[in-house]
Amino acid sequence: MKKKIPNAKRRMWLARKARTRTALGRSERVLLTVFRSGKHTYAQLVDRVSGNTLATASTLDSAIAGEGATGNVAAATRVGEAIARIAREKQIEEVVFNRNGFLYHGRVKAVADGARGAGLQF
Image: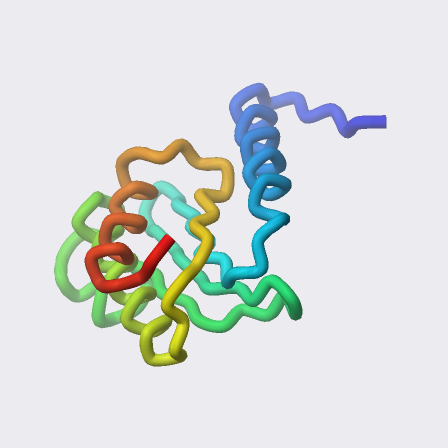
């Protein structure tokens, strides 16, 4: 029996998240997962096999947050560049982008563009 979620907006987000997760389940690459809140943007690299988090970057980091506002597209681009830099240090060249149920525009797209611009392939 499916769990009933009363909030329609949250229900739709969870449905998109589940669809995205099943579509990405066929890949053996490292996941680049994005989460955005009202004030911050987070990105993490997750190993598919073990389920361990390999690296994280967010607008809470002092290097990223010190450059201005944290809840805008420019900050999300900096998060994408930072996570790509960390991935390159760990010899990770190719990842699968998991938008985590969020629509691919705005800050989520900015993280992807920042990571691609810094040399990550997906």
